[in-house]
Image (cartoon, rainbow, N blue to C red; front, top):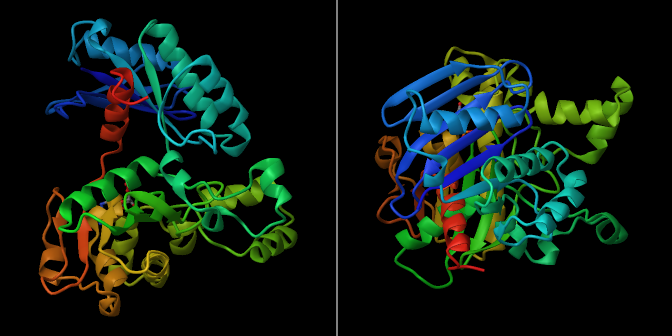
Length: 399
Ligand code: AMP
């Protein structure tokens, strides 16, 4: 069984070819600058291939990827027939999709209705589905939604305290994102716990985009992102939680339109906005070490924001059995983990500095033996969730 996993964005796309049963990854890659010029970065085994080829549209990009998989230096399969199914990362499933689904005309029609909720992402996702249907006719396509895992949140957690009609008329509520990662990591954590019932797990997915979720018995009960991914934690370039009054005041002082304000909150804020240096935490950590005070402030704000959500979710879960760190920052930055966990002994979370500083690409426990709750570092694997959901749906194991 081979699944072609596609994550189509507005000017780029990521792909992987994976066997969901053995978890073997045959190839992985990225097309960038679609519609501008075009670069394909393709990896297979220990080999890397970079091609600069014109990609005027996503169709040419996907055609090139498929050609690279079966021909040329990057070849990993003999023909497109070796691909059994396609799994698509889809960003916004609204309230319509609480799990992954086979892509049908009705699913695409529903996703089109959800475009106002994700104007940048859903059109690209739909385009990826339609192009795969055209280039690989007859092969099943499955959509795996970023929002689906969070659909189990209770109404009192997902509602905003705006007039109720804003929800009934426009669907304005919290949806949450990074669902495949929160699902994967919380599920792995459940397997690592001795306890099998009443499991209370907090997942910190910390990367360029970051979110925290509270997971009770495998079901999400709260998450930090909202109607869109701009809410919650401070991120690489996104502001996270900022009071509505601060935004409207900034707009009036700077004479900004809504689009300009959104551009600032999504692309010029967060770690980049505070440090003035970079959206990349590694560079900002280096800046802090070199004595840059705004880099110090950015790092402290990042860690403080995460810690506040952890405390809130311990309360939401009536306690905690495991706190999990994942994503580029969560998996790699021992300093952020250390600051987040400092002083949480009263909540049963005690980090072991030696275990925290040890590097490993594997899932591990970094809490002291005497810590009442576990602290896990778990590498996320969103592609595996997409491939596995696709396999289960295509083979009829899941309807
Ligand atoms: P992701 O979006 O999951 O790929 O995560 C990207 C973020 O992880 C960037 O802010 C990187 O700076 C950060 N990151 C990656 N490696 C490290 C590291 N060793 N220490 C601190 N941050 C890191």
